[in-house]
Length: 180
Image (cartoon, rainbow, N blue to C red; front, side, top):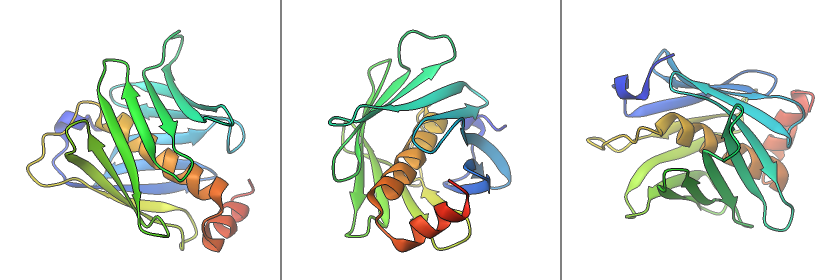
């Protein structure tokens, strides 16, 4: 896998590789992966050259996604989900971000840092056989060390919100074809 510090691209691709398995690609190089451990809303794992993490959605009224390293008692990151999509991300070292859906159909998602600067924009596509997305990083932007975690966590959030919210028939049809 490619380390985020070696990333020479301003465009990443999220591509399905099987039943609820995804890769985050920088060109032909794998930056990170996202894999289902059990069923759709339970546990996912994320791997990159920097770390291996476990994602777990918890809570009904105030849902959040807790991200932990194996064996760690404290979260590496927490994504607090907003009821209309998007939310806020807090990393264990104190960095915070906002994930903001854009447009009526949530055709674009923007991740901003605490200063309001855009880290990247995700443009999902649920019309193909597998959900996929393009992640565009603004040119000349300093990439955060946590880019693999942020890209994977945001892609997970887009999938989760799209699946649970039933925003489009294409999402339901695609996920049904994956035997969820």
